[in-house]
Length: 416
Length: 147
Image (cartoon, rainbow over all chains, first blue to last red):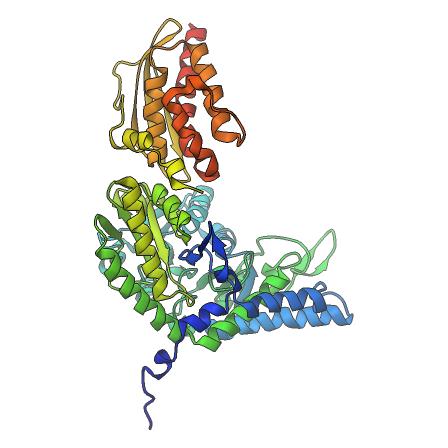
């Protein structure tokens, strides 16, 4: 039995080389080199993804699952190849469990409307956590209104940590669905989703995990996680916008009614009776985002070329470095200090509103997100109207952190 | 783009020490303003003597542009008649939104906000106070009408 050197691959990570794979990063903003620190909102695309989408559009496009002609067969093969790539990437049990959607938001709405709406009884509970993105709150509020179910919320502590004890506390005999983030978009907190799933299953609840902020940053193994539904988006993992994935347990998906009707999701239609197509097509009404799926497959190829574990190690190094450097900025407070974090840093600066920070940083070429990050309950909890957020990706470099710190100095200068 | 155009000294000053900050109680009318994009919230209370806005206050949280704009607005409209306020609003609206609009002499301090138009995403910050004031004035008018 041989043991591979643990850090051999990590030392080979060349962020400058990775940076050069992303054409947009070489552009200027307001006459300054772009420093892109908003990847948690949407990441940029490498040349290989842009070219894969371009090649599809130029050479292979036709509608899928329909024609017998050559182009339709090629497009279908590419679309289904993308599904197979997604399955392998997150280790789902079968391509029948991999449903293409418009994104994480649509994936969650699908589960809320097709799974939850048909099952929930008045008084049944949907358990969320205090750090959820609006996309993992509002769909459940809608279905709660429709069914009479009740929403319960697991609190977090001042670091932004959801601990298992308070989760277990809130888990009750009426809990039917647990929906939680894998990684918080606003705070960076990594949640113990495997243990959460285990506890929820022990009480007979079904678990949906919003993986939008996890999949680009760490290895996700759905066989190990054992959750019932897992949702994510292509555009946060170097792929195109407008395409995302819902992975669902096959036995649950089989029992769920379609949530949208149309072409592709049927086997036969007459005005008296329609029989639905098999999985996963039952949930993919209408012509899908074919080029988006092709781009997603190319993005997965790209991530695997770099190695998701190498990306993770690189980002964690940047997170530690940025945390250290930002902590030294006078008046700066980091919001979200969980011990387990993805490469996201939310912060505020005394006397400078995040919105003003955003404008000043932008004038320096530094792109950060400012606002409530679609997580208004999180802002409320920390007593701030908004934060600034810097987030790192595979192409982020140490020099980006220095540029951020310098731009924050400029903000202090402007505000005196 | 030049940050000095946006963050002029008078704006930074009004942000640091907002004028007419607080709440009138009792008040003849009030309104809340909210910019969900950035979380800015303002509350305006006012008193009227006939057609004249005899006194007003604002309170709330927001970026430097929204706070300074509210502070300067309160100073500018206090004691003015409704039609004078409407005229001023028309002028400031044009200055904020039209790239080529001349900056009228009678704007006084409010002219400092003209730099905002070079930063389109910030125009809403500067106009929030005015929309809130308009809402409070309209509400008082409706109250008058129903009486």
